[in-house]
Structure formats: C-alpha cells, structure tokens
Length: 173
Image 1: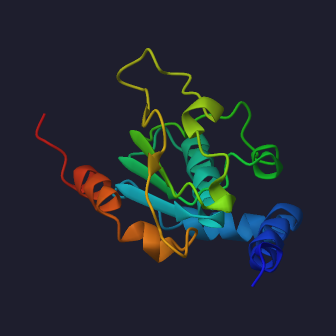
Image 2: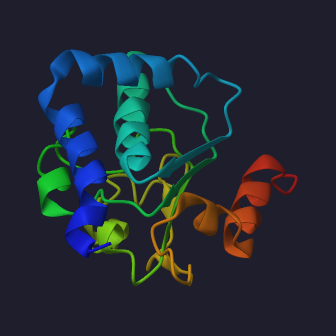
Image 3: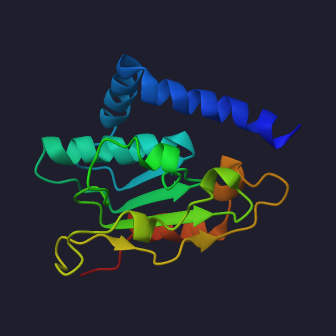
C-alpha cells in the first residue's frame, strides 16, 4: 500500500466532517452528550482529536466550566494547516476548563506531522494558575513500529497509561 492509498480514508473522513455541516453538528452533539461534570479524561485519536477539541470548546461555551482533568491527543492532525485553519474556535487555545492537555506522537506518523500543540494552541490563561491549562511543552514521542498512526499502538504505551492514571487518581490537595 502506498502512502497516498493509506491517506485516502482519513482524508475522506476529514473532508466530510469539515464540509457537511449537519454531519459535523451531529458528531459534536453525540460526543458532547457523553461529556459531563463527571468526565475526567477525554481521549482523541486522528479525527477524534479534532472532534474532542471542538466538542470541548462547545461545552465550555455552553456552561460555566469543563471539569475534564486530561485531554489526551494521540496521532493528532490538529496542527496540520488544512485542519488547523478550519477549526471553529479562534483564536486557537486549549478548551476552557481543561486542566491538562497531553499530545503524544510517533515521529513517523504523517497524520501528526505538525505536532507542537503548545505553540499552535497557546493558553490565554498561562499566568493564572487557577485557570490555566497545563500542556506538555514538547509532544511526548513514542515508537509505534510498523503502524505509526495506529490508535491501539499509541494507547498501549506506558506514557498513555501514566497520564490517564494521573488524571483519574490525582494526588490529594
């Protein structure tokens, strides 16, 4: 399989998401319906990163605050210009109320080629400890072997488990 052949399905999915308004709305509504005040971790892979990002912003706009401890993005295309430039939220930044955003990439994952989310999505609340989002400076790098974009290869990594466990069982205050 060539790289071009491998990219056809994800490109088709992205195109439909961005170009079919009713589909995009339905997807965001469905995802948003599963995120409530008890949700501690939201994980996105590939197009799921885009959906998670936009859904969390919509929820932040519709309520006083999200309570999500971790937005974990793996194999994220959010930084690619054709995606980044079509995101609804301007200026770009972490969704309000997300306490931490960890981005994990395989350097060989072409879908996640523009992976430095901390630069592309600056936190407007950096100086406000109570409101800022903790972001990993550089993306965390993993080696997914022969399947650099495979979601399961990302999720079985110890670094994913560490951040998920940290969000689900934070140290006492």
